[in-house]
Length: 485
Ligand code: ADP
Image (cartoon, rainbow, N blue to C red; front, side):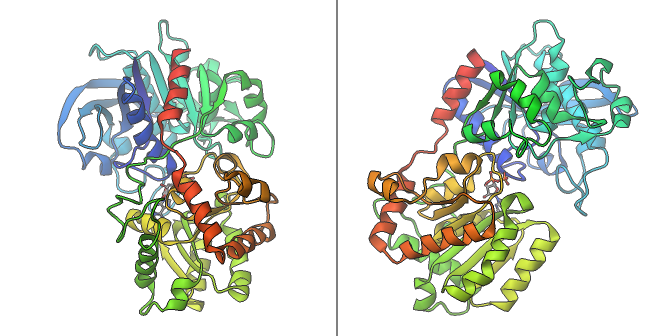
């Protein structure tokens, strides 16, 4: 079976979040099951610089905002990818410094509507083998709003491939104005509430939901949640009416990259069968990064880790509200790596200055440090208000670092709260709170810190998480049956 993946990022070439991880792991898991894959990506400057073996497949001329835009289609073999990548090289739209979606000052690129409508137009042409290279997919699998128009462009085509659209995060809707719609000469019949129209403008995410044959999202609980007003961003009515074609399929993780027994970023390795002394050495090395001297008290004290985007979704304000309480009440230390909203960055930086012995903060994006925090911490804080799937809680389970999470989305589907019953049946692997506020979050951390002083129980919880299987095999199986249906 031939499947064309269309997405705006893929690890390790370009990644701003979990989407990039999935676009690396899922196509590889499918390929391992015999699927013939091509992955289409935009030709960002940073991506083009990483390519060397390039072949030109051809040119596609499509409508842009001011007339015809010519895109060169490159095929490349990259050592990290077991299948060919197709890169849409269109320098005026993609060859620029910085982030795929926002400028250096954090503003959306003003031409995002054009960038991702051209991207989708070209991807749809490739799906129809417009370049006549003899590779015609049975399925096109498009991801998030950046690829939302692909299914819409294909919808009217005769003998088109089946279209699958995956929502990785409903919060990012790809909203643009009616002016953009007109300028880009998008088909007039899309302009209706049953089409792409959304609150006076249009939404590329909505286009994916309306026009794809199947819609998926990245956990079963999130699939239910997005059909409710609380989580639906105004699309809950539409999603409820399309519940028949909406599927929640839990993401896996890349168990090769995230393996505490082999991880090259770690100073010491460990496994479920022998957690210590390896995990302790990781904790020590992590503390040594921030402290001139690491004494026994610091090593014994619980270390609470956090890695992620500093945005409201991630419950960062609850973490900030919890910190003074925890610093006053307990001997816990706190290590955080992240970047995002400037006010959050400043607050964490200030906290670290006030408590240099106990609060360690690194603002930025740092892949090795993310691994070291997962390995060296005792608890991982992930109090997301909503979480489509979440990867970090699965990484932390695998690294013997017990997650503290709000009961939502993929967090609810992967973390089993410690209770008498879950301890008895051996399913407990972390701490879950049910009320969306910082007090409930603090209460969950208190429960965790109580158990931290019971090493035998703690180790059992660690082992439960470390032995769980979060690989992509079962998710890939679900996607395959969806493709075949
Ligand atoms: P989201 O996709 O909403 O950002 P996920 O938990 O699904 O959240 O995935 C986040 C991914 O990005 C993980 O692989 C995580 O390790 C990584 N990540 C997030 N922030 C950073 C950072 N500052 N440095 C390194 N990796 C990060």
